[in-house]
Figure 1 (cartoon, rainbow, N blue to C red):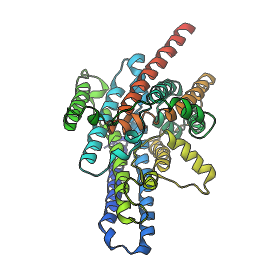
Figure 2: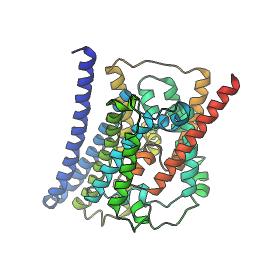
Figure 3: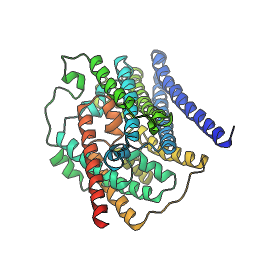
Figure 4: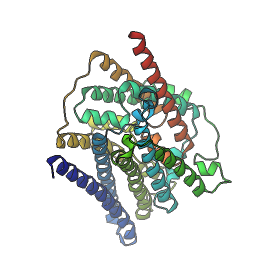
Length: 409
């Protein structure tokens, strides 16, 4: 066996071990629920602290897995969007469809069997701010074209030594922080978020109540499966690399929901005095179910690094660190780490793209991973609307860039 195959085999084993480690942490959390009745009062605080530590560790592991998988596969939802018009190659688009297939199926099964209550997630419990979804998604879609990658891909590019990716990340953090807490937050809160549409729910099966939830799920999964299966013979999608990469990315979303869902259900069982009910606002604030997202998470990670004192690390922050770490380790392990400096023109694109991505992601309440995978896995109509306009924005941005290139020739 060649050295390359041995390296690939060991890498595959490490990734499988990472997934199994996350499953072990989930069952550790669930184990605390089993002993809740026998815990003395003086042990409650320690157990809750242990659960918080496990959630943070799981976030780092899941982020590491995503970073390594994206680095090795070059999976990128930005390419999945704009390749439709730039190269007409739908390989990345089908990889995204596979990630959606696994994420939706896994998340809905967790929800239906009671392992995670997605109704408490931001994607289903927030008002339907339709203008924010449209404007934020469209601007973010344009940004991923200029920035050279989606929200996860730019972190991975920075981790593997691409300085253009690092510039995009820095611009993304600056813009998202300003839109979350700073000067552009007022525009988001007072204008874009103020326009809402009154819906009975954001959960798609609840909107079309005349159709059972499982039929909605089956129809969506069949549509995704058909799109993947109609790939012409001889295309890269027909190999194992892209379907496996898409499935693995989807699985990281499912594990993210499972970890946070387990914590959300376990803490009130242990600490019923502090948290009166699952709808207690303080409980939601601390243990609201989440999965992977890099909209607010990047800004929170930067704030955690520069403030530290008084700040608390959480699942989202640790997953950001995990993605960078995973991509760095994967690049070093496969000897693909390389310092690459962008040209002046590319520097401008990276800067503008990062600024647009950061603003759009916060306005839309999620990026292509947060809304495009985690959100859609909950069957949130807001997430579906956001991802639709991310696609439209990316295609529009790609067409504009192609027009500029042809004009300059």
